[in-house]
Length: 228
Image 1: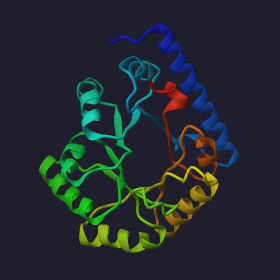
Image 2 (image 1 turned 90 degrees about the horizontal axis):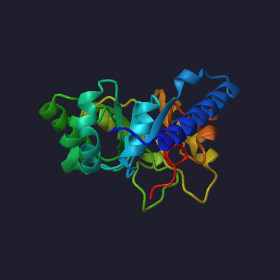
Image 3 (image 1 turned 180 degrees about the vertical axis):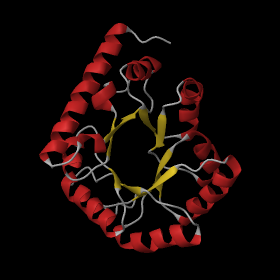
Image 4 (image 1 turned 45 degrees about the horizontal axis):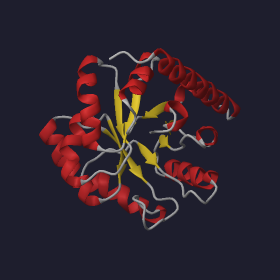
């Protein structure tokens, strides 16, 4: 499928601007811009925008739901060996095998039952996506994630009981609080536990996240425009 030229130009221009801002934020923090990945959050986006992003050179995409992602990416995955797909939404334990078969990174590990399901899914599918632990930095009852105080025990359990390697941490700050407090907290937690990867920052605050140590930012509307 070929994207409409106006759609292609719009997404390409937005991507270029975002990458430029990421680079500026990284340099301001004394960091190498190449150490920050742009994750294009493609959930619920129409096909022409996805194709426009691919045509612009974007290869790392984030999805919220396993079934929706499979429908969107199964065929494209066969055609593009350089795609990296990340699950950035909650994962039900009974969908662990499907997630492992499709995704390269799962950013939302947050409970022991999911850790156990992932171990079985690795064996079943022969694929072991890289793992991030989602931290509920605002300790919001309606939001998934491990509470900061529970993170040490959770990481010990994941590593020692289930033998899983964790690559990094991910968070979604509360809307009503300064994101900087939560990004700084996540960075401290990562350093404390020897984790190098930080998935934090979205369309409204990705530059701030980069300045505070993000190694990947999850950008949707700023890249694709608002979903219909």
